Image (cartoon, rainbow, N blue to C red):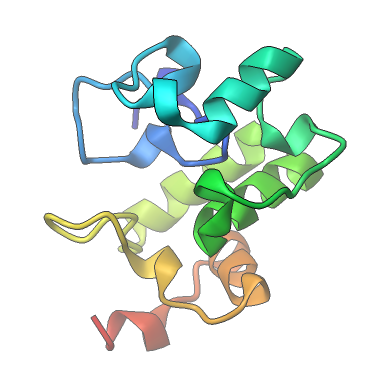
Length: 133
């Protein structure tokens, strides 16, 4: 995996994204859509590394309205970026899919609660979600 990509300001896992191989992530000025992105602009204005560092986190609007991304940002706030990267890398090797082929959703989008997403991140348990793809 490409560690240098890391995470987007919102918590999106650029490090395991397969959508655009040439994108280096918004924190590295690589996102084509950054001008309209609420999270990108807000974090840049506040001079913070990501939404997880903001005193108003989690706010509404933008990418944080997506449960997976909000949970990733919360996880970073509690455990740090390197811990999330390690878990996502381990899970990818174990067959947990971040993006299904040609889609922007994956196994982390199947759960109905934030706690279920955290459990996948921490423990790699996703068997009941894989069956429903």
